[in-house]
Image 1 (cartoon, rainbow, N blue to C red):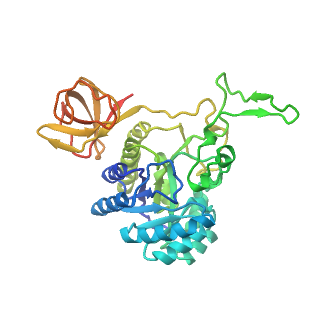
Image 2: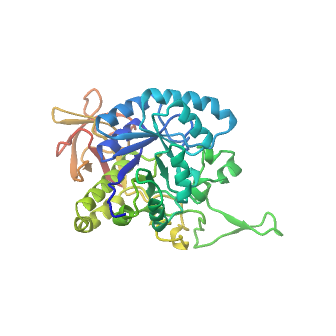
Image 3: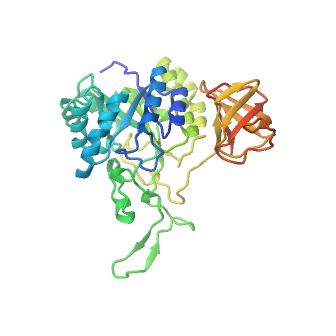
Length: 409
């Protein structure tokens, strides 16, 4: 198959603010979760009213919205799920992301006009599985993260042309097969398969030998110990040609609990990389240093290509810590520009005189000085110490509405 499939850039959103950021910074589609039935219970998630507003905003910008309903349901979930899908039918998302066959059946009955996408949680590892879901009426299947590009390409060659493949290309990796993990439930009683994962794969462990109960032997990598389940983050910014060649229709970014800064940086960088490659591979290669520099400004745990080029080895794990690299601090989004000042809802402290950066959707980063600062009543202040505080700013260069402010940490 020689036809180039123009990939969709699919970005996560934890809130209405982040959804709007994703749209403004280059998403073709956004995936979100409601207050139930998604696999990110600790994310802020959307009320029905927020979903409706988000869908209206996205559609006004020709961007699609997909809603996750990908828990592995128990009997007690089914009645409420039916009501939930009826409510979703009224607000009209573009697709539902589902893993459980029972949930799928309810969605098909209650809102057949909304596309159904099969979550990676359903362990989609071969073309016969894809064909099965196609025959059930699914438009798209999300590939298991354990697949190589060669395997995905073989799936593409053995499924209907109109059927879509979605694959994760950036973000956190799960230690368990396609995210189906029991560690959280075992240790804390919080079920990862119902959205309440406590991420025990990021914890520090010791070894106990069965004849020496209570004798804990640390697993040493260095003097700080080791985090034996702690995977590096996936990053495929340097492999857009291979992803396109494999026939993937939707490039999915992980991170439905991430900030607007993360979403803006990842969406903007992959948007430019995809568009540059579709224009010419030479342009894509020429701009590689910019992509790599910008993607490293997101929070991350070092990078890996996951399973795409073969089975991961010991080099895909991080052994000495479990924290993110975080080079930039999120300050806020420009909500209004008036009389030479810009209004934000402040997220982290900064002060008059600070050098900060305006991050623009078109790829520009403009360094500016905070010349003046005012509170919501336009009283002069020297700093913004309180999160969620309304602040008016006079900067050395005037930003535009929807620009994002950040500062190097």
